[in-house]
Length: 474
Image (cartoon, rainbow, N blue to C red; front, side):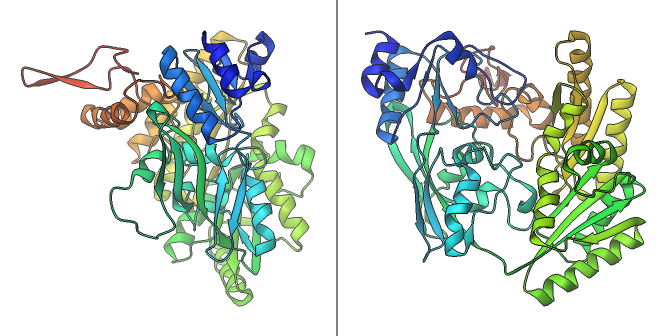
């Protein structure tokens, strides 16, 4: 039988899409890169995922795991065709309130998990801006973060175990509820591997108790450097807030144009800070932040007066990317990380790159952990502008790396940053990662052409290590 027939027998006709329009809808994620899938499948459980893997290996076609398609680096774009395996039907939630954990399907929407845990006084800490749409499986794939991961850590800090389908359709459980299980941390290898080592079907997550009190501060600054210095000094004081987020003026105006949340549109930058805990503690922490902000030239300081006001402010922060539609039809961004103490100089360099390239750039970022999100608004239908955009993007990443940063803080590598990996890793580093890929995926079926650039795998030639030829395995 052919590929589609085998898949229909295994999954049912309704769970296998082959019509051109259907394929087009699943030909890309939220990035700018589109592929051409041969078929899109919707397995209903782990057994069916395992069967898809076996069928793919039999026919020699790749699998691209996909959640909600909110990824920003083309990690879920089928760049070499094959099967797009959509996990959204894997949406079970089994909460263990006594242990503050839950087994959840890879297709569970991030925000739905916290809503389900809410009646138990619990929540799931990672909260990407796309949390109302993105899936837990996608969060695991990219080790996603979010505004409230400053104090609690990104997704990897909240994953205790994984159910994964590996080569040959083998289903394994990695990790457990034990806080420090013996043996190698294979779970840690899967988190952040972007679907290149296997297909995650279930996740054992750690849930946290909802804090009794919250204080959310909105601060405006006459200069961006004042906001970034405030962030560094808050952390240096020994205080680690739940969130420290910065947005620059152009983006403040874009958000305020439709949200009308009372954002400081006259400020060069705004800092959104949040502290949680008991009432006495959060009040004193809010005062510490306010004092530091005033010392760094804050022009306005406001504390959200009601839960509704707090939600409105966070709606503005998490809708920032969408607000850029007022500036241009498309956007391109990176999520490189720099040390907090280098934020001011890095931001100045990024603005200089954009101005020199005659591009419209806005900034919104997780300032507390130095995770930048410089966003270039442009029209992708203009190839000349697109060329300038991509060139500026590479310059921005280079500046972040020179300033002691990392290539990605939460969006992953995918295809977008794949060819920049050599700027961040040595030949030996890439070879070690390629060897791991070979161990987990000897048949080269899982999400090929992603993360590692061609030639990452090295061979020995008379004692001299040289990159393998392009396309040897990726």
